[in-house]
Image (tube, rainbow, N blue to C red; front, side, top):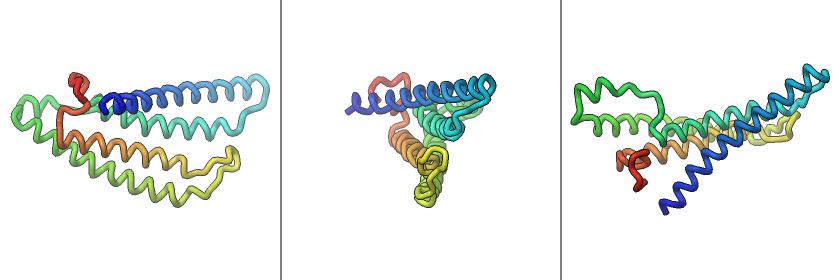
Amino acid sequence: MKGLAEKLWNSIEAIVALLMVVMIGLVFTNVVLRYGFSSSLRPSVELSRMGLVWVVMLGAVVVLRREEHLAVTEISDALFPRAVPILRRIGYMVILFAVGMLFWGAFRQMMSNWNNISQLTGLPSGLFYLAGVISGALMAFVAAVRIINADAFHPDNKDS
């Protein structure tokens, strides 16, 4: 089971990297076509924008799992060393609430916009919001596991 979970996390990181490469390729190609040949790939603007949304949302999941997000812990670590595990769990409860709102709002927007088809790409506009649904669910999972087990997914912990 741990091997399967690790493959899931690695595949999310690979998807983020692949999306970055595709976005760079699309934007570079569009710039060359626009300034070199007075032409452009019209769908590339929308596809790169969608790629950016997915990179940001999936990147937030990766960062939360790795605990590489911005955090100011000097005060709590110095003044309340015994309370740090409790404070972290409270923080993850707040995160769980916030990503729950993200999930619910993105889900409602996805359902509302799924039938709106883009004229340029032919893709549903709901794909933008699907990124929020998936990242909200994954971040909620990470936060819930960390509330139960504070050391889960920790980079130093090889058991997660």
